[in-house]
Image (cartoon, rainbow, N blue to C red; front, side, top):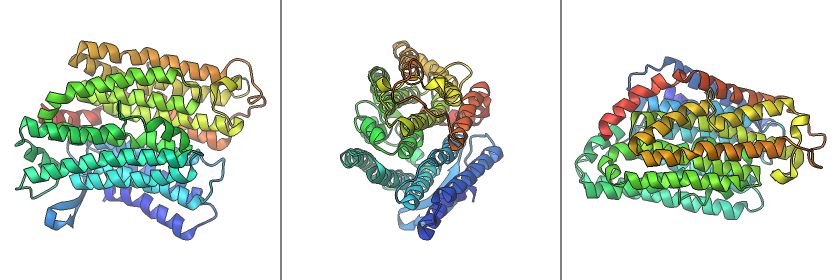
Length: 483
């Protein structure tokens, strides 16, 4: 029942907010999110790292088609459940300094999004996975369309079309798989693995592209990324945090949970192509990030580059690559939420994210400066920060797969340092501008948002075994399926 509780709690809290329309919905939302964090911590504490799925529940859903509402948590999904429960409370907390229009709906949508994300990461039925994969699109679409910037309608329409297009490819893949296996009596993901073994290389190739396009758009990976920068910039920052911190992990998780084990022959044929696209994204995203003047857009392109590295590590199909991808998903989620929160705090005071109009902020903001630097160092994978562990394992896995891919992927270390250090230097140091004169340091709710994130940057860097022993058995079990 623990997994069911993790899915139901945000839904119930969101419905309470909508039905009561109280004067302070953000308080109800934050309480629900912190209770969800406690449940996530309990799941982590009680989890036994033996490669099996735990805290499971299964109920008949569409019995005639063998579809069940079946959920559970293994070492792979636990990392992403922990990430989701970790960052959502601080996303909500970061909004305490302002009043959102139609606040009950705003906070209810955040909670509904959290429930859908937990559903994706815990689904043990492939059609239930698809259901939550689609449902997660709805709350974030409305968050962006209603509370976004002046170009929100055009941008969110493009976002919706892209992601819907990708989801249709996944649906076609599922239907194709169903039609090719007339004896299918269950849509349990574990049984789909076994049934897919009977497909030949050509059939698996078709399925590879159906699933890869769906997940590549969601992450996104080059060249399916064009919806991302505008959507991140135009969306309210809370929605941007959800999309970059957690939602894009639905795509990387889908690669691990669905694509690799279902179509191993397809991956053998097309995996090099996928890695090539991912590595191109690393370099391209980093170069574009260096050229940005808007803080939010710079962070968006940095996220795109980091996802390219995660994707390349997954397709390396090595123990280090898969472990590193999961550790980097966790680290990236924490870091990017912190960076977007900082950009929003600066924007609230200056009404600008233009780096050329900022500067000198550090002179009056010791707290903001410290947190900004710590989270930035995590993002550039400084040793003893959370980003280092995942990035080191990823580069080792990619290097094992192919030396040249590993060498080009390693450019992320240099390029990432360039654009991140440039962002901090331009925004925080130097002479003050008209916009930054009298810049106030962090308020209490802002400190409460950034301190835990900065703490996790250091904690996960110093003590990576907090999660690595949990990941390893599940990844080894996966490797026996895909090799």
